[in-house]
Length: 125
Image (cartoon, rainbow, N blue to C red; front, side):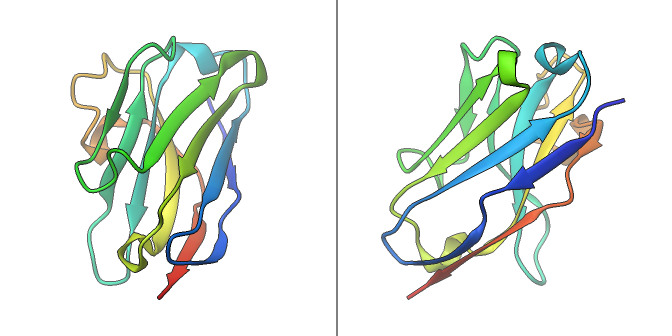
């Protein structure tokens, strides 16, 4: 069982930056692929970024590539999402998620076994 707690959301102006953190409980953090997803009102949950177990490989949605950076520190059981050059369309609830699977379907929400409660990110224009 893995419990995930996100933090770092808030209100920021367009062009600004935020850093989200996701702290995981348990001793098996390093055995999970980690992902970030987001969900805006009236829209489906969408993939944002994912990172391999070792942190050596990262994956991004086209809409955030070049602006967002996912990273992890296994010794701290924490995954991060650094968000730069934020746009109003980035406004959403952001969720971190953990997957015990092979990671080949890392873009799909149902690949992930555990989810955090979400943190709100609001970007004003």
